[in-house]
Image (cartoon, rainbow, N blue to C red; front, top):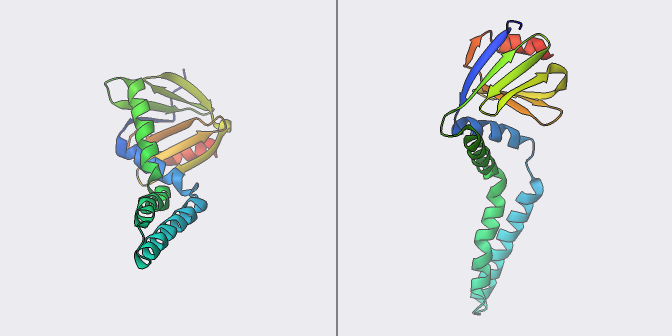
Length: 167
């Protein structure tokens, strides 16, 4: 077998999943969610105020909708945390009791990913997207496979050598 040009052995933590999920969330911000949340919040405040002014017992209706409106308003800003926790927990189940460790070997024509799930071989031509965060680097294939690694975990080579392989 060929000698890898670059080798990354990554131990991924829950905070790494949050960092990646937050970066992915930036491109999928739902403006309509925000508008609906603001409208529900405004409507609940209006209902509460008019019920108080008119001295009716309908105050509870506005109060009930207020937390719903606030949640819908802030959800787009915090949804990445829920996704990261779900992904991390599912990966932990696959890995068992151990840490989430993957070893990514970069060769001239392809890369291999070894983890608790086994080994996967991916061709560079199948990579459709890549992105970096402060500590992480991720590759996404046309089949939706996401390979992520810590940038500081290269045992051989570095990120600049990896970029040259798939560009």
